[in-house]
Image 1 (cartoon, rainbow, N blue to C red):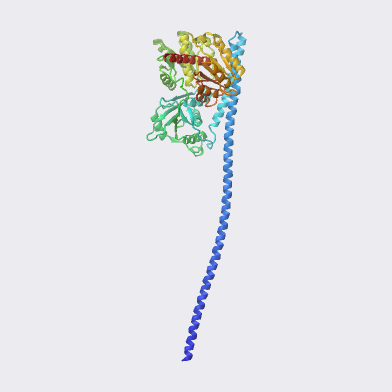
Image 2 (image 1 turned 90 degrees about the horizontal axis):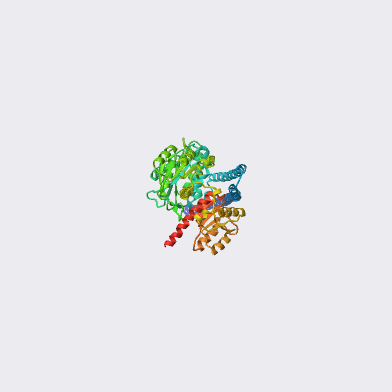
Length: 603
């Protein structure tokens, strides 16, 4: 029994020992597994850390590459912008350097033409003048071609630059670029700005011109006989920002509501020319869409030769009162006969004349015009050169024989000199080169009306006399640094009876206007020490009695006219100065100055 108890006790103890051993073994196994797991996780963690470090290095390397590429892009963009700016400055300088001496050459040649010359000598003079104008035409062609190329620059370089924009000037400059090509292809270039459109707006004038250039070019390649640019104020419900609607079409729409409808229902231009339906999309159209979108608008194509686009605008304060805003007192209500078989052009001209308080009537042919004149009186005839049957020259001859005192304005294609061949028969015409510019048409109409009052429509440098200054008295200051141009201006004005003063730069101008009162200053824009712009700004700030300031500039790049107006100048003549343009300018402003003086006396 005792032995049995010892046996069971020993077994129990053994069981306890085994249980303890099993427990320790289990603990050891678990500990080993935990240790192995820790080693495994540490290894994974180290590996992960190494991977993260590698990724960080890769990210850092990629970021460095991106920063490098971004820096290169910024530098490339800056270089491109500097290149464009430098090219524009070079072209502007080229224009100035050629036009300044050409002003002297053509001006002095014109003076020489007024002396007693033999037939052979006169032929030589005509050749010099003709060659000089051809040279200027080539300069303009180079500059316009450069502008066309700039209109297709990469869309990456299209930062918006809001500025005061003269819509008339903006559109006229675009149409001028295509004038020669249009004359060769016999395409009529027309534009009209709606009466509700503000005269001056704040927008990116360069980008607006880029879009117009691309679209006008697109319409012209379709071989249409007319390209019309129209501008209207679009009134979109629920939109506070005013929108301008532009139409570049071969058929005038002239309806803001219809334009808004076509803008939303027309075909959208592709973002990328490669995605177009036929793969032949002009790259300029893709650029145009990008530019219009950036200006807060949209663009659509009605068909291959009709485009509508809109842009958001703000109205801008007018830098000066527009001298062509209304007709000069004394000529209100005058009847004007428009002779043109192009009804779009005729109605655009009719609308403009009505805004100037004239009474226009339209005749589609020269024969119809003669019938109208036989039945009623008329103060002026404005005729187009290109018409079926009786063209503008033939009509002018007929009018001169039957109505010798009736002034005639000929709307003439650029570089067309046919009117010079028969000048002796019908007398000298008032020539307005197409595309017609509003301010030039205005000045020509005034000159035509005034010529009737003077009793002669014939104007020639050989008939300049001191009587001109007696009829249009002015105290004139010439601001010009070029000695030849000084000499030409003095000679011309002396022949007209004026004794002008001369200033060689802006500082001298300020000294002289501080000592004497001048009615009118012919202000060269580019002069040493102080240019014409700065001098004009100082005059506007400092003088109590303000003179009329007329810019004379050899710079004809985009925005030059508007820049002169914003500086405080009253009018603008480009070099080389045409004698008739100068005479018209002096006539116009002499009368306006006289009216201002009379108004002050009445007060």
